Length: 374
Image (cartoon, rainbow, N blue to C red; front, side, top):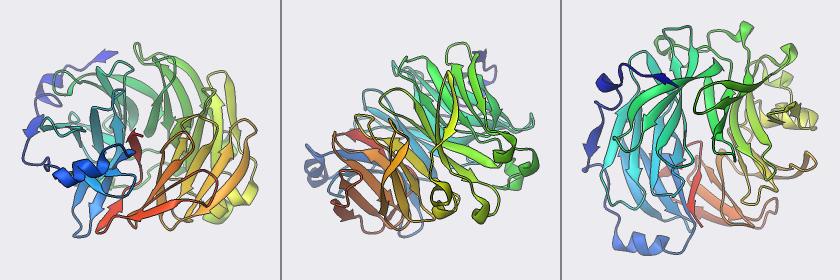
């Protein structure tokens, strides 16, 4: 791991305790969440402000934390006691908070010439946090910032992502290997969210050593698929990594957006043709596996659809419609939870249409949903 010589002047030094931001959960809210599955998601309130919320399976907000700007994904520590929400690209802030509300929140930032891509993952022992970042002064070189949890999320180093535009990342079952979705897109904060290299994109799925940063394996999409930006990841029960992508050209020409790979097995796209490409409007917003790893789900918010796949066969086994659906998380051994930009939380056995629906008034869930317990 490359040490961060600027850490003392950046991420750790700028961390702030913000007790005023952590809204005290009402006794009723605590009781509502007791015994139920709990989920965490970044969100937007009805007045246009942003927050991160812990919500129960019945749709009640158990805890709410105000954000100064839009958050994206949330990383949850192995014991579920800590969660970190990351700014949406090209934001530079992250907020760590105690999921039980017992401690003040901590805001930390990327160092100069870096920004977050919105995703992170804790180490297996919970002592470190890895976050995908853009080194935009070095032609968009992708890095994983490494943050020390015990010292207030001080940035202590970085690892190469071995590609451009790293988005989601996943710690594998061995507790050491990290899989990174390198979207292949060069961006720069001066250009906002514009993609700067669509003609030369090189999306890849990379497996790297989280201790040394060494490249373990790299799978690159073939030239005909170079505009399929690999974005989101999950692992099935066998340890195989599944991904969802976003097509950067005309929707009508979109290839299949969902595929899988392993350290020793190349990328294979799911069979589905147009239904899993143009039929999903060229955009997969999130992927997740069921608790037992026997079902993989991929959401397509622009198409208002979730596709369910049997990872053992690679076949689509179901599809569910829900307007602006994006967040997916396992809810129990037999159920999965879906969240939408309309504030809808639905929980049921995949791929069945038999599900409970809850609406959270005045709240729009952001792209990702994570389970805390249940």
